[in-house]
Image (cartoon, rainbow, N blue to C red):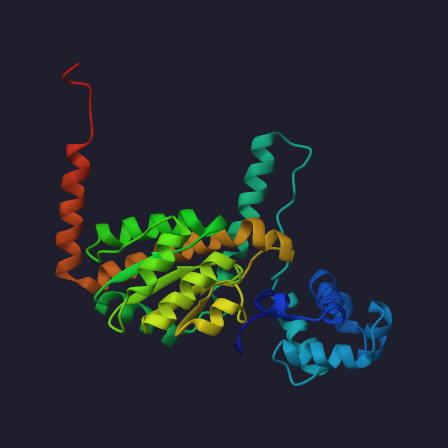
Length: 287
């Protein structure tokens, strides 16, 4: 991830860091301008950790050392990565919502900084070519899987989906090496989701993971991993809220690329979908 910002790199690995390293990245994320001006020893003293923890944190983030981290911070801070919209807490509820949405929108581009182009292309090819396609998620990601399965089916890529965790595992266990399971999990650690992934792995099916972290039990099982970086400020916020927003935005584009790659098959499916939708619209003329 050579072009990924320090904030994006932190978001992708924060779940794997030791307590001392987490304290270091919290300072890096919240006070990048300060870190740029400090030596490694000064930062260690400021955080209250050993200098070796600073070096280890830099290496975990993919930098050769502390000097390289400082250069990256200077470049991305200068580019205005951390500029934010005013909170507008003194305004109306609508003002506050507008400010929050504007801030989130300004951060969305960083969500794709960790996405590998070759992995994305392979995932699309696998989805299109699978004999059977199963889309799974649990917890806060469950609604995303249901929506993606319906949308993929509507564009001509028939997709199976079930909400019951046991049914997910049973169905995954009955897959074959010609099948693909698309699994969505922000943390990559939801127990029921990991059990379903293990069932698919035992069946020999190909697993595509859409997640927020580069390291997790789900990633360990996946054949293709699409990391959609967090745009939130804290690990807890990532787990509870924001990842679902960036995942939803990504999945919208993912489905669209599959529709486009399906060509005439996708256009024919779209026409059938529109026909069904039109038949279910009621203008009240018969009332």
